[in-house]
Image (cartoon, rainbow, N blue to C red; front, side):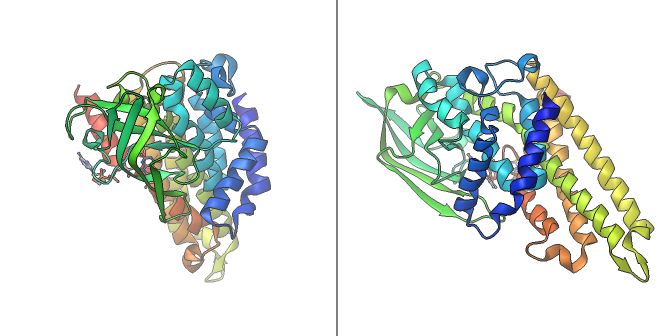
Length: 376
Ligand SMILES: Cc1cc2nc3c(=O)[nH]c(=O)nc-3n(C[C@H](O)[C@H](O)[C@H](O)COP(=O)(O)OP(=O)(O)OC[C@H]3O[C@@H](n4cnc5c(N)ncnc54)[C@H](O)[C@@H]3O)c2cc1C
């Protein structure tokens, strides 16, 4: 099953990786989603119970299979970061609905996400609340007819493209409290939702989402009031391993590019690959990548088996994303000046891989999690 899925992602990547050339980030994102949807791959971002796909005996129909997601992300990232991003955001953005939405909301929202018709987004981060979600200041006040949201989210992927945002907001307590946070489903076309896009290092539809007296019905509260942080962390724990898998995809591509280039390029009358220093590089790139792949397998298998796997997930995310950064950097070095030329694959990989050490918990946060597990 997993091998067949990987093969489908490979075919898609080989056919379409070149299609994003010259497109702006919004057009590229929409195009990537259309490719993924027509190949039936968006369905893997939503549990089978809600119109998504199932690995059968490998994982429960109530949750997304992390192994399936990891194999898809690894293969898609190998071919193009935009394919990887648009796949995972369908799951990341809709997971809180899966975990806490009413049956009616799930039935209304999730099939559209699974088939790629509707774009999902997750809105946790704020200008003053990144690693520390207890600092979330966006407020949701209860009214007779539902809730009113006020506040600002930033660095929100799919900002301006999404049909809805799953939003972490404060319903009680003061800024700094980890209690008193709740999660909401907010349609992008709700009155009082505004967006402001900005650019980041590599093409990525991202920006601020602002809520100004944004009114939503009571049924758009996800889970119970005060359960928002649990839903946010539940989402991240399910999807974090797949960030490591995407990093492995970028790193695997960088290694392939280096291997080809070092064999073909001649300087001083011989192939670059005949220099021991560069051969050592390849050996180390290969070893780090393999170790990262094994950590991802371990974490994904544990999560699919229903284990919390806190240490396994943190280890995989930390090691794979840091290793991929190093591997892509070595690949740029192997290409010399060509390595920084726009349009050369390793230049794109170098930019694409950077954010993975930051989002869904920075490397430092993964170290804090691991240290807590080690120290008890
Ligand atoms: C491309 C991209 C896409 C993103 N998409 C989304 C999205 O869709 N939805 C969303 O909600 N957010 C998104 N984010 C935001 C992302 O989750 C945050 O950037 C991340 O959680 C870090 O928060 P911050 O940027 O506020 O950094 P900060 O929390 O301010 O951290 C700054 C630095 O300090 C370090 N640091 C912080 N606390 C500690 C500590 N206690 N000990 C040691 N070091 C520490 C961090 O590791 C980091 O290196 C995205 C970010 C990027 C770059």
